[in-house]
Image 1: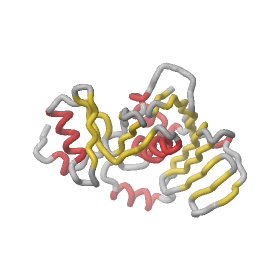
Image 2 (image 1 turned 90 degrees about the horizontal axis):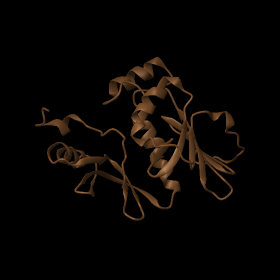
Image 3 (image 1 turned 180 degrees about the horizontal axis):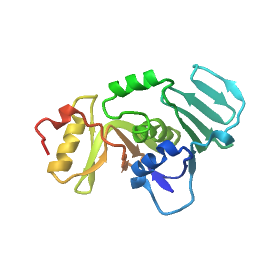
Image 4 (image 1 turned 120 degrees about the horizontal axis):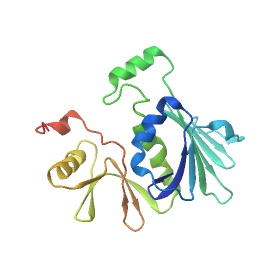
Amino acid sequence: MYSFFGIPTTLELKKSDYKSILQDELSPYKIDKKEATILITDDWLSFDSEIISNNPSQHYYYKNSIHIKDKLTELAFVFDAENTLTTIFFKLNYASSFTRRSIRKCLNMQFTNRIENIGQIFHENVLIPMTFFFEHLTPIHASGYSLNAKTVLLGGTGGTGKTTLEMEMCLQHHASFVTDDIAIIDNEGFVYPNYNNPKIYAYNLIGKPS
């Protein structure tokens, strides 16, 4: 059982090639068993709906669900009769050929393949979009840290120094990591931890040999 941004969630994984990596990366979210609000699963056997419309081409709409296909993943968000999100079906798409996999491996800055990258993909393609369906939650493009019982969010476009300042505060000023790149905040101003691994590049490490 997990608590993703305050939402009790059951996670059922069938794919053994990424299961252990993803479970390890999601371990900070684990909680004692309680009644789950949502099921997230990669077992699509129970997903069976009749398409109502298909526009744009990667979006499929059903009576009680939305099915989205992109290069990295397939997702289906399923709702009950009261339009409450109940289930998320998740599928990792693999590169279709050895040549394409090799090219992507060379171009990737952080990971050699999508299996290694499963934690980041899961956060950005499953967990963050999940928050869109909860009125009290809002995703914000920001990094953040906690210091003296307060959370500070650092906004700005890519490359302006959000991650660099967050690292500086955590490494040199005893702040605690809260989130990198995407923050989830509720309607009372509480910021939930987002444990997606920080996107650290070479320019973040200049002058920081440690």
